[in-house]
Length: 454
Image (tube, rainbow, N blue to C red; front, side, top):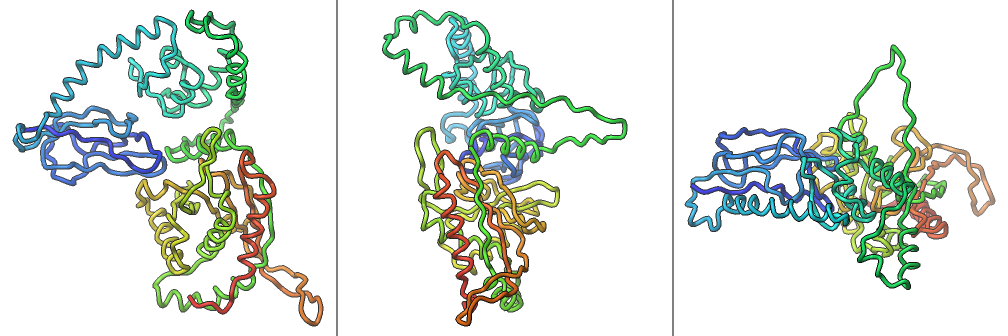
């Protein structure tokens, strides 16, 4: 008999952890290769983790609702394979890890006892089992918050977990208290570096968000608990507004040619391809062209560096039947023609509504489009989907009287008009670039060829 480890799989770009939703197998159950052992949730997608081989589930290392880092062992499976041929036994590796744990714990205790920051020690959870998200640990490392101090913070998140607001509030309160004596090693630092350190500290400091006022509840009010996805959306939106100074530019585009072309070909397209052609792929096509003209819209920020993305990956915001929102991504959108974009859009939208997207299909976006016109809204001020720096909202297409220039002179005609709202991160996108980009998208839509082939 041999033992193998069931590892928390990598589930997409930048995904560092996942929550165990439900164990589908119990200890002692027989498992077949590729059979699902547990359900996990990451970001906005639920997934299942399959068994790599036939065997018996010997031990579960985490419980439901636990947050597990990618790459961690989540269970031990006993197989019929020869232990000798399996190489080094995972059980032995587990014993080695257990034997090393006390030494690591002692080292952490020494660091805390000496009053030094423990941020450099990467520990996913504290000695009492308290979990901290990658964002909270990153802030703690940046601000020199020790593990002991993290442990003492009363979390306002699910199951008492410490949120970003909790740690920022703690840092603000700690900053207002009398400063503790610095370690002797810091006291002998060259005086010339003191102003530099002060400047760095000042540039990092950000005001903590004020706590929301308590809400009074009436006798007939209904309390609806947020589901997991809604909590994640809420956190992501607050984080985005806190991270990026948002500016929004608006342009009204005359999309008459585009509307007339779609009305002309939609029945033939559906008959030939077995699905509808919507305005979304037409908008994405124009976005891709404009991004090629203004590649500095297709960037992300990493500290003081601007990361210019090589690929154009367009996220398309999609409303779910539950009322929540998800953003599937069309990877390398510039490689598709209009037919290919149409099939991509329809496929992703269909599987998003059925909760059939894989984690990787909602990761890696470099620019996002949201179609607020679907709900009859003429314009909106969308929130940037981090770590991107811009997002565009397409409003409802409305018939309007407009002045049209003709060889015979100006005339009043009925035209199809649509507002485009472009929100961008003012740290790296100024009004000139943000305004020119949305104007260029409108130009491509207005120049749509009404005689083009499908």
